[in-house]
Image 1: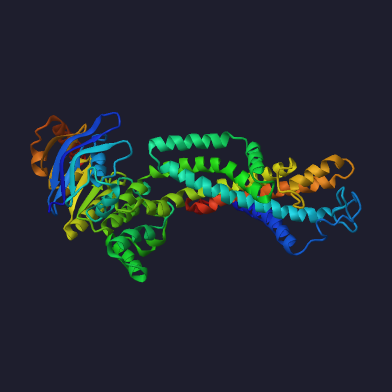
Image 2: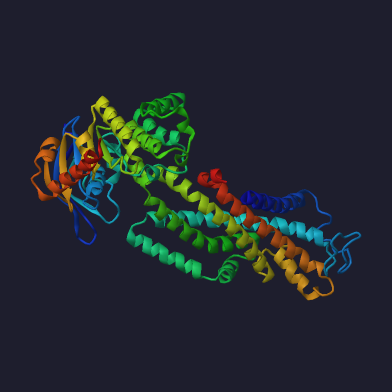
Length: 270
Length: 263
C-alpha cells in the first residue's frame, strides 16, 4: 500500500508540471518578452506571482520554464538511455579484452565533470536547448552503460538463458526476449532517477549561463536572475525553486513506484 | 545414425585444469543412459559440452557428435540449428530455468513455434496440448513461474524441452530440487514421455536409486573421469570400482534403515 501511495503522489506531482507545460504551449498569461508589468511588482493583482526586474510576468516565465525542464529532462534521458544501453549491452556481451576497453572508457566518461563536458559541448556548438540535451545525455550515458553492463552480465549467468539457448534460440532473440525484459525493471527505475538528475543539471547549466539562452526562461536562469533581488522580491527565487523540487521529487517517487509495477513477483506480494 | 556419440571429451578451464577428462560414451536411439557421480564430478559440464554451451572461459576438446553434427569447435550459429531438435535439456532447478518475467505459456510457445512453425490459434492449442501432456492444468499458461509450485515448474520445463521434439533428452538432475513425493511423480512422467516418443535419454544424477529406476546403462564419473560403465543391473550387483561400491553400499544402507523400521 505504501508503494502505491508514493507512486500516486509522484504521478500527481509530475502530472501537475506536465499540465503546466502543456498549457504553456497554447496559452500564457502574458507574452514571455512583455516588459510592461513594471519592475519587481509584488504578487497579486494583474500579475499573480508578480514580475521580475525587467517587468516580465513571473508566472509566464515559470510556465515556459516547465516546458524547458521537461524537454531537456526527457530529451537527455532518451540520448543517455540510447547511448548508455547500447554501450552497456555491447560491454556485457563483449569478450574480456573488449569489455576491459569499454569499461575503462565508461569510467572516464563517468569521472568527467558534467559541467566541463557541458562547457565543451557549448563551446563546440552553441548554448542552446540541443546542446544542453546532448551534454547532459552524454554525461548520463556513462552511468547508464555501466549499470546496463552489470545487469546484462548478471542475467547472462542465469539458468533460463542457458535453458533458452539449449532449445536453439539465437543470441539476438535471447536479448530481445529474455535479457532486455529482465534488466528493464532496474534500468527503468534508474532512468527515471536520471530524469530527475537531468532536470537539476539543466537548472545548474542555465544558472551558470550554459543552458538554453533567453528567451528560453529556464528555471535555473530565473533563479540566477532573482538572486540579486532575493531580499526585496523573494517570490522570484522561491517559485522556480519550489517547482524544481516538485518535479524532481515527483519523478523520484514515480521511479520508486515503477520498480514495483515492472516486477510481477513484487506486484503480487503487495 | 547414432543420436549421441561422445569420444575423448575433455573440458578444460582457463587455467589449464581438466574438469572432465577423456570421457567416451554413446547413446543408441531410444536408449537410456545414466550419468552418475557426486557434485563437482563434471556431470553437468558434460551436458553443457554436449550442447556446445560451456560457460565462458571453459573449452571442450575431443569429439561430441550430436545427431551427426560435431559440437566441439563448430561456430555457435551453426549449432543453433542442432540445439533443440537433436537434443534438449531439463535442468535441475526449475525456478531458475524459467524466465521469471515471462508467462509459462509464452515460454512454452517459442520452441513449439520454432519447431513446428505454428502461429496464432494453432500455436495456442499446441501449448495447451503440451501442458496437458505433462498433466498441467490450462490456467498454468497464464501464470508466472513464481505463481506455480516446484513440481509444476519442473513439468513446465519438461514440456519446454519436449516441445523441441529432440532425438535426445538430457535430464540434468531433474528431480533433485523437488520434494520426494513430487520426485517420483515427475520421474514417472518423464519415463512415460520418453518411452512414448522413442527418445534417447541421458539422465544425470547423483542418486543411484533414481538411476536404477530409469536407466538401462550407467556411466560412473569421479573427479571428471569415468571410473566404470556398464548395464545398470550389473553395476548395482557387482560394482568393480571402489567408488561405485561405496555408492551402492550407501544406497543399500539407506534402504536397510527403512527395512529395519518396517513392521
